[in-house]
Length: 237
Image (cartoon, rainbow, N blue to C red; front, side, top):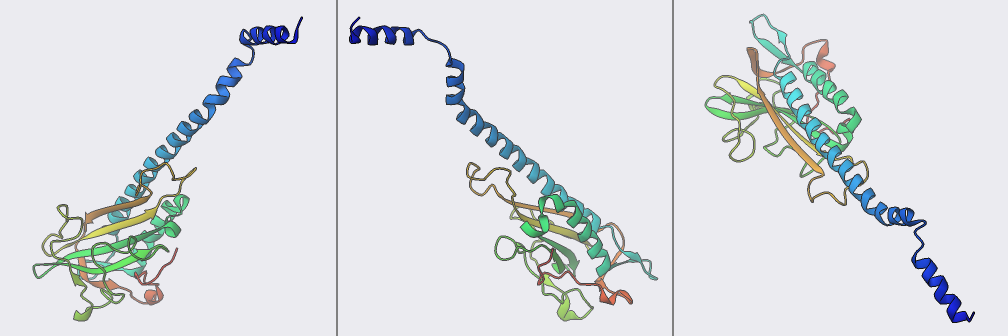
């Protein structure tokens, strides 16, 4: 048998050989299946992260609207230690997502004062800073709300707080707790295949203050005068 004949015979035998076909098909399809699977995992994790950040904002606003200590005037006094407690609860809730290192939380007291919507004071948590992390709806000074001095009455926020067309306002002679969270999404695999901007999570929430609160200031009575004020000029975890 000539060499050419042997080559032709081998080619005919090879063309009818089906062994290893499944392995070859798997090798060719595996990159596509793996990519789709990882995309699904990342998308599901992103959706879960959005849900969790949204719930954290709601919980903080809800808790901050309830806390305080009864005063002799039958009003609730909000203290620095009360604010620190609700921020500590948020810190624990967001620990698995590294909220305090990958994000910035701003708690604002929006109040109605003489017909104006006023951001009286703000308290913050998180290491992130700058545009996209600081309050998007106005910023108070570190001393605002610390006493009854008119210079520390906060800033006017015309029309309330929130995005255009969806602003919230404080009721007459009352106030609400407004929370803003800006967070950098923590991926499972990577973010290259996610839509642009999808990894920067931004959520707001607000609750009207439940009790008859004394809105004149945030109290810091002895011996709690050493309570750390979580003002927004600080960047802590």
